[in-house]
Length: 355
Image (cartoon, rainbow, N blue to C red; front, side, top):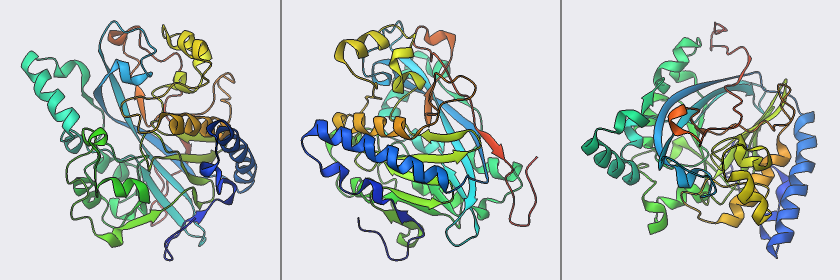
């Protein structure tokens, strides 16, 4: 693994070489085994200080993408709810750090070619309001927690689909963007299969010194890791947190808890199709840059996650963009939703706590 000499993150040796193993069935077994080994060490290192999640906005999404075409859809479009996390943890230097995960700015996302074209189509028929809903503004969340936006140390996204960093980085002026080298490389030369989901010029003008570029799997501090989970995009990575309820994982590899545990799904077609093909996960399938890698990545997430104390049937995997539980989407409604995360107390720079 290569890593910038100035980085504050640490590589995770348990995953060294697993993505190079061939043939692919052996790679999947190696990914699962490495995740189980790392999970033991991760749990022993301690927990995050605090984490809070916030719903930001609901956006339209083709139902056929959400569950890899397995679901039976009455409506061709559903909505997915973007979720933002504020996490505090002890860094490797012993200092408290604040990470903001997925601070999506809806106005920027609307400029991604897919959403720009979809918006124009929906406006013609007056259908936009059926799928779009605004809950919160990333810029306004932190002050309510007793933090200034200037207090944020790190920003990150599982990948940079529909993100306009030109709008996001100025909101958190002292934060570094944690970004996988392969995800950053996508902006240098975009493939036609990637184009529709990235904001054109979305990284233009972002100073290099504001980027914390990493490769592979890394630890940020006590109870926080970013695991490389390629497939949905080349540089996709998943947030992993150790909390009083055990390990939580967040990514957009799946659209609901059903995606990682289709055997429990009540969405028509999902359980049946997964069983027919002998598959243990169901992909979020809008890009499929590498579906085998994405499958392996979701298994990696499953191996890391703890079971929910609320309902032990379900693993603690929370989508960064989750299929909305709206009746109008029936029958494509999540079988189970964990809701949000709320652990510990967010503390401001001056020691003030959130209410």
